[in-house]
Length: 92
Image (cartoon, rainbow, N blue to C red):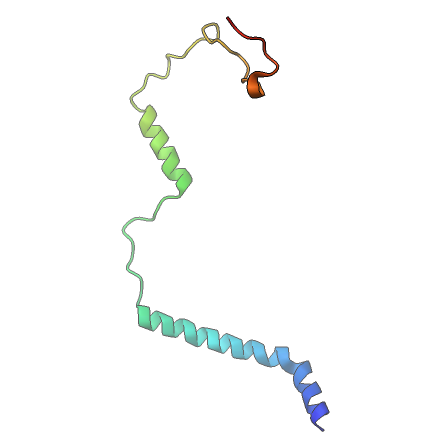
């Protein structure tokens, strides 16, 4: 008789544990909200890291004259430096 009872409990376990877990989670969530209280509303939503970076870059270039750039003729190197400068001859 015990084996039949355990087989029935084992086969119906997911149907019993899900509602129990749901109720325990709901009660815990409400208890935590009651104990901690509602969070204070923020005056301004926090900006993401990428938005903060874009704002900082815009502030940095706000006072600069963007028409003055270095010409390609004045640059010494056109390609990135090779790893450990193995493939380039020494410049004098």
